[in-house]
Image (cartoon, rainbow, N blue to C red):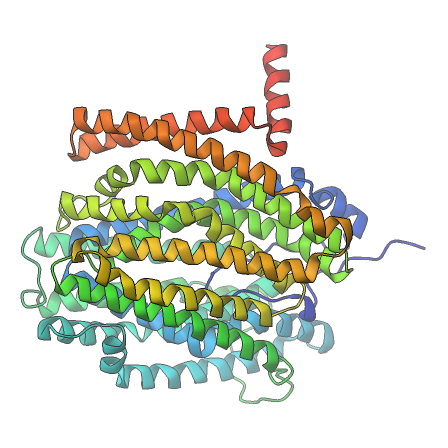
Length: 585
């Protein structure tokens, strides 16, 4: 009997996506590929060869988007500084994404691809009419949501802590009314991407965010040229500058979405409105959608509290929500390049193991993901802990952002850098639950994390001065990820601890502890070197760049040497290849 043929797309009941994370789409297997062929291509559970190859390919693709995103942030920091103006812009620009995810985005991204795939296999027209009906209903809903959001924009900005300074309140409300229009374009982009992904088109949607970054970079440069470094405050910013800032940001999201629309016709789904709820399948997906909405809603509690605390710190003379956003961006970049690539590469293999109730296979891949995350992220966390202040100066100390403010952003990054691996492992654990078709447990874990995070966030302004609030918020966030790691581990033990494989935990604990020790030693040595170079080179842009380079090299080389001495399993293959090449040379 021939081996079963793998389906071209993931079945509807096996696809669940974590909301908010914005994970890149998982490329589907070649049509007609058998289970044995997939195993040969990706490797056996717990094996790293196929996963490392796939992750490396996706990391390169993701890198361009992340780098342009960082450049965009650097330009905005130079143009707007990190004071009341940027806090107003940052809060207003966060609102459309939050409103979209809370009301529609989480449900759309969690259920739409499975529904589209099911319609392709069920309907005579290959799901074209279904995609058109669903898109029409969704876009109409997004328009209604946008109109309501624009009408209540002052309530939304107040909810996120924009209050007290009349000029900042007026500016934030003005920007919010412009930027909340993005909700429609977020939805159009998500729908277009879902339709294209369901039909095997992955490249253009992956590159679309780069266009958005380029547009916003151009907007920031034009803003700088129009105003130049100077006293930028809510009372001094001109209407033309507000429209340039808001309109350019809105244009970036619109371009990101609309560039995908012409591709729909090429994919066989012409853009045509169809008003009907017939056979939309939304009722059958309601249970999953409810848990996704709850997940997003619970996570936003922590976001609201953190943003309010940060915005209050700005009014008291410290760094605020824009500085917290920039520190968080630098914190998440390594995960976005390394962690997301590993996670995305592991998902198909882990999902198949869960579908066939292969508990040891799931445990082995979970352990592999944990070890690979530690291998990639622990040296980065050690380096950020040491060179964070220098990195902050190199990235942001220009234009309207002073050296001292930029150093404060980097210091906050250094304080919270230890949470990089806990964040990656927590999200990996959540992926395991989704692979097992469990949308309830991730929401409950998120509840536990928010219960930990909110009191810590509220304690920050009580315990530290306003200039250190952002660092305190980063510390509280990283401690929350540690709690998430612990909660996820306990929940997984209950579901996966069956027999010997569950008890061993896949062999992740020992290697991770050895790597953590090596990273700590590297950080200690790097700290000593950076203290010397910091005093010798100073805190200017050039001096900080020198400190950044020297500290990164010292930490990286020391950590790698420590990993080799610790005999990490995933390094054996690369080391053997290097030795063989040196021997031939």
